[in-house]
Length: 163
Image (cartoon, rainbow, N blue to C red):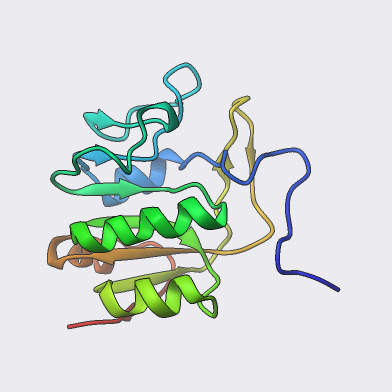
């Protein structure tokens, strides 16, 4: 069985919006470079939000960043490289640590990560919730975001990557 790219046939792999409880637990944030369009955005994550049309990769990043990036391979890597260069934020990522993105970008640069105990019930554009066919991991860059992640109380296993 080929499990490399399991997909939910009813939802795009890039349209999984962060549940509010995660932001309420880990925030506040200054920037969301991967925000949903304003007309389907369930709530504001940060005062500055870049949508796909704004091209968050080409814009200036500032402050503490929240990132729930598109999970398609090419933009996912580019957003993670940008977060690593910025060095101050938390990302909600697919729990697939054996791939090159994790080996080449995340493990060498992130401060810590939290393997989430339960699958996230993401918000969908139509307002319903659903879980993808994979687990999630929260990854922190920078001391402040590491403290937020470590003290969050979110169930799972916290792991220090780089001191």
